[in-house]
Length: 547
Image 1: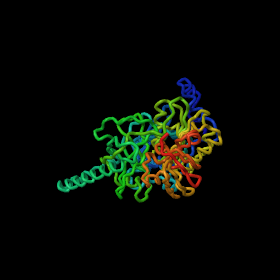
Image 2 (image 1 turned 135 degrees about the vertical axis):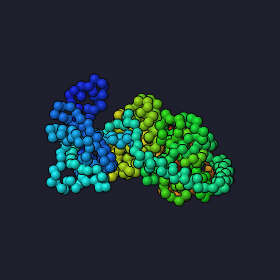
Image 3 (image 1 turned 90 degrees about the horizontal axis):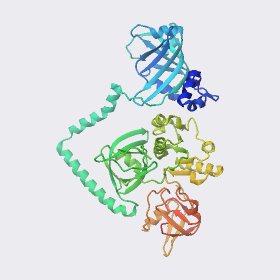
C-alpha cells in the first residue's frame, strides 16, 4: 500500500540517508500503489479521542521549528471526519508563538502519545483557525466541565499519518491510571483486614481438607493419563484480554527458574470440576520462550456447564496453586533458515504468539496473519501489533477477510506454514495446500478443539486376539468408548496431535481427523488416532499396540 506519509516525509536527502544506513529497502513498498494513508480509520479516531494531550510542531518566519504541548481532559481533541480533527485552544502563557507561526505557514506535525501502552501516532496536517462567527464548528469543539478559558479553536486537515514502533518508549502513568490499578488491591486489603482470626483458621482448615481430597482424587485418576504431575505452579497474574478470554501468569511457588520450553509447547493443566471429576486440559504457552520466570496461558471461556474453561475463569484466582506436567510440544518450529508463515484464528493465536517471539529472536524471516471476529475480540492484538508491527497483518472479519489461498499462493516457495484455529481455518489451509501442490511436511497444523464433533455413523470395534466387541455411538469417540469399557488406552491431547492414543487397524476403512500422522503411517502402517478418527466402514478390527 502506498503511503502518503512517505510522499511527504521521504525527501531525496532522507532517502539518501536511508540508503547509507541500510534501511532504504524497508520503506520502498510505502511509495507504490493506489491507496494513500491519510484517511483515519476507527482505530486512529478512537486513539486520538482518548488522549489528554499532544505535541504540535510549527515553522516560524525565521525557518526555526517550534514544538508546543497542548493538553486538556481526555477527548478534548475531536475527530470531525476521516481527514479532519479539531480542538479548543485554552489560555496558556500568552506568548502565542504557535498561533503566530500558523498565520505564515499552516503546515504542522503532531505527536499523540499513549505512554502506558507504548503507542504513538504521528500526523502531518494543515492547520486552520476557526472563525469567531462559525458557531457550528465552535460548538463541536466545546469541552464540557473543563474550567480553563477557551481563547480560540483550530481545525487540522490531515495530510498523512503513520504509527510509530514502541521502541524506547518508557511507560508512564497518570495519577488517575495508577489509582485505577491499585484500587482493587486496596479494597481487597481492606476486606482482608475485616476478617477475624477465627474465620481465617476455619477457612484454612477447609482449604486443607479440600486439597487433600483433591490430591487423593488425582491419584485415582492418574493411571489413565499419560505423564504425571511434575510442576506445582502459582497464579501470579491475571489479565482480562477480551470479553471471554483471560490470561494467567504462572510461576513456581518459590520463584525459581521454570523449565525451558520451545515455541508451540503446551501445559497439561489438571482441573477439578464441580461434580468431582478431574480433567486434563491442554493450554499453549503464549509467552516468549526466552523468559524463564513465568509461563503465560490464555483461556477462552466456553460458557458451558461443567466445562473446564468456565471452572478456570470462576475459580482460578491470584495466589492459587495448580498442578501441571512439564511442557510438551507437538507443534514445533523448524530448525533451519526457511521462512515461516504463521496463520492464527481467534484463540489459536496462543501457540502462534510464542512462535513469532522465537522467530524474531533468532532473526528468521516470517509474517503473522491473525484473524478474528472483531478487533475487540482478538486477544493480544494490541501488543502483537506493537511488537511485530511490520510482520503482522490483522483480519477483523467485520472489515477484512483472511484469504488463505492468496496468502499461501504469494508466500515464499520454501515457506513453512504454521496454522492454529477453528476447523474451518484448518480445512481451508489443507484444501489450499492440496490445490497448490504444497508438500504436507511444510504445513503444520494445530486445532484448538478436537474437531469432528459430529460422527458420520456408529460403528463396532473388534479387539485383536479377543472376542470383545465395543460399540461406538454417533457422538462418542473411539477412545472414550474403549475407556468406558475398561480398556486401558494411553492418551494425552484428545485432539489428534500427540500420537499417544495411536492404535493399529487390521481390518476396516478409517476416516482420519488427526494432525500428527503422516500418509505413510496412515496407509502403509495402518495407524489411527483413537481420540479423533473414526470408521467409514461399519466395523474396525484394531490392535492395541503403540508403533
